[in-house]
Length: 263
Image (tube, rainbow, N blue to C red; front, side, top):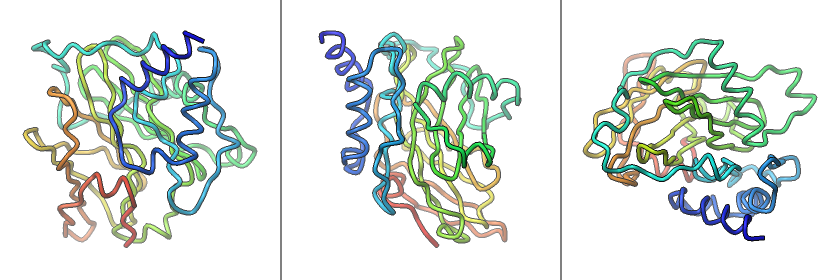
């Protein structure tokens, strides 16, 4: 019993409070299953209720690491924290992406169904310095995974019932991950999402930080960045670059996390 209490405290300490929909029944049920499980058990999602809206079953990024050993204390005083990080990403080689996926999917407890076996997963990955971040997308769920500089892989988030391409339209955006992770170097923010058919680029503006250029491919995007002074999600904005040259600016990440922009 004490082990479960310790794990519960570790998960809650590692996760930043997020908007209200994370506290709804599907998300809470998933977190309860993680806390009640043994360290070797991955949470199953097959019993989770899925609705047309308010269907997020993501918890804050670090909260899906079911092993307490994977959660390390922050080292906020380190001058060289995330020193190799860059606002522009490099592609993640396919072999490295496959290795991360194999290690991450059991961690987030992603369901395997016959339908998903017939429809291959879309994997989008990036490297920023010594770190890697990727998203896994199917028709029924998406997940994100983070590889630290020392090779540690964490299942960062999972999201149920993403909207369809048709629902997003030409200029829409759905934020499917917006969690905070805490490593031995401090805090970082992990973002991923789904884009409308005419969106070709995403720039993330963070107060008092450099603009972050997201990795975009096949209608999806992702990016991560350090938060050296702790939680800084307030005021973070997304700007969408469209195929005909126009931009859509001033989209608050916190608003998109509550509801997607369908346009």
